[in-house]
Image (cartoon, rainbow, N blue to C red; front, side, top):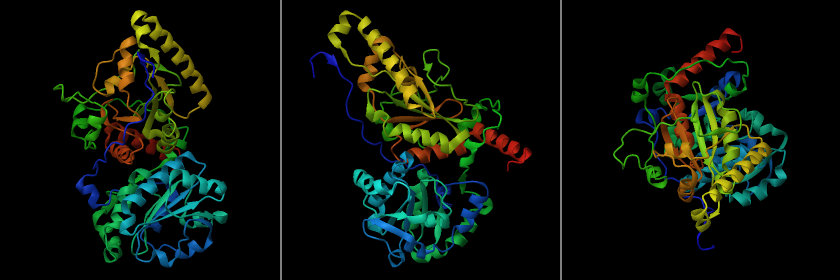
Length: 450
């Protein structure tokens, strides 16, 4: 590198260490988030704790890796992933399945990748690129998917040691908890799962269902849902916030003696919305920080965030916060501050073109002065040439989750499976989200849509 230049093109930070986010009572009732709604969810619920039809394996063809037989499943916990190698959300789910293979493979876990018939010619190369070690097969005619009522890839199903479909259509953020549940129990314990679930989940307590159709109902009004009483937020059961992330992302507000959690002003005049500002009423805010000059900050993250906005619908407002990571000559910048301003202007112009070309399904905002980034970390923002110091310290990929009072509730990397667990917990905890959900449900009932 040229001496005296500032280069901010370096490798991504390591993955934030796993965090334990489940409260004991939730763990006792399994605390696994499911997806789906309406008649399909009811059918999936009815499928749970019934025998998985092992004969379905006979319809799978063109195996990549060693074929799985019905006998192979006897007494083994199984994770089934329906996926398509060409779909970005499926890629993230395949990585999650591989993580489960590494974590629980030596405890007998079998992972079965059931690939869509369409695009199967790329399955083997994708598996090699992602270093997947579990077997993959083509679902010829989609018979397997139809039998287990899979709707759109990716979907996760978990089978216990007794051969029962224990969890049907599990949210990716709950995969570890679902797999851990079936791996750690014996076959005899699995046989009694129905009676245990009945006693632990009276009134469906502990079973969370993600209604993915919330994002597809276009005519629900946008309610005016104000921030709720501060006491409700103080008494809510939020997930663990920082742990290793506090060190990784240099969130030094605690070390300075400030025990207050950071609160971020999304209405700041110092930021520029490059796509329509999202409605945040009764929605959790999810912000990832990126720069188009750093591919590692967005290449795997943006497809995931598009999928997140689609899947969670009205429960979240996803924002890609673009920060100016630029390259200038340090000596030149010292002599002429306009060098930095020119570089920032060029960055902004290129960013606008990138946003127009990519046509993302979530909102992009330009954080030119590092206002949102710095306040998320509990720091004071510094613009102009001082922003280069932030660029030097920028760690990615980084995501923050904010409750409806704009308080930072979790921070880390979106590539860690704890991100989804934290998001699910925050959605189910936030008081304003519950009010908006109730109004949505009342409206759908009143208009005959549910």
